[in-house]
Length: 182
Image (cartoon, rainbow, N blue to C red):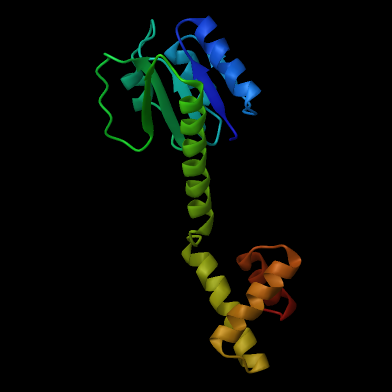
């Protein structure tokens, strides 16, 4: 897991959780004692998990959750009698007293969910602007005219050259256009 931020009003609790996670191979990005510190720590990070308590001097967990950056999940640790409303996949609660194996299994599950989301984002087709789309169409048109290719063959040709050169499709199409004099 890339980013774990721990936030508890009592620093000793946060440090003991950090120690347990460190012994289990997890890297903790930051330890905080207020909600504002926790949110500031999350800004600029891509994704991860905020392990936090129920109530801070400056805000409750609901407020922190409301401002949680996209890509982050919250692991809330609270007393068994605490009234927690969970209506999201990004919020999981564990009750005190905390069992180490429950904490580790929950973080492992959350890490798996984050990895799945990353893979889904990467596999989504890139949305191109109209200008980029026109560049690709012109390059395919030139390949189809000069090399007697079908549109599918021209597209595959641009894809292959793009992969071989380590460039994007549009950049490769622009190179084809400049090499062919258009």
